[in-house]
Length: 72
Image 1 (cartoon, rainbow, N blue to C red):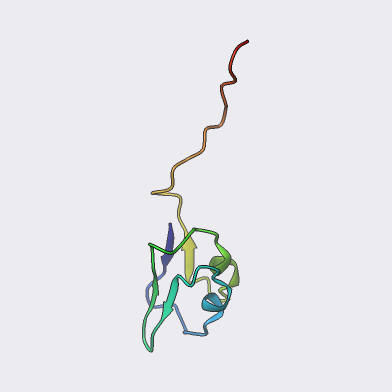
Image 2 (cartoon, rainbow, N blue to C red):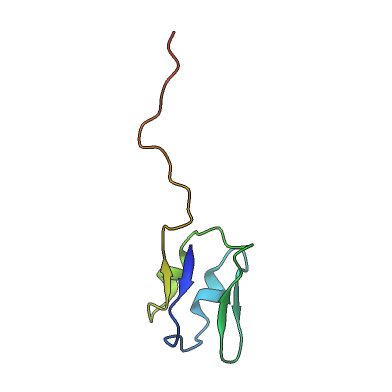
């Protein structure tokens, strides 16, 4: 899940410009991730020069480390 670190954002808009899903709302004094649109691509995390946006794995379904192949 993508999270915003409270109080660090300077509202530069770098994250908004790179989001392919238009999932970031930048207001005068607030920034918000629209969870329903966010695909966790992390482009906003990489674009933020202030490290305001973070990615946390909680809530993301993990992929199996081993796959079982059918016998036969």
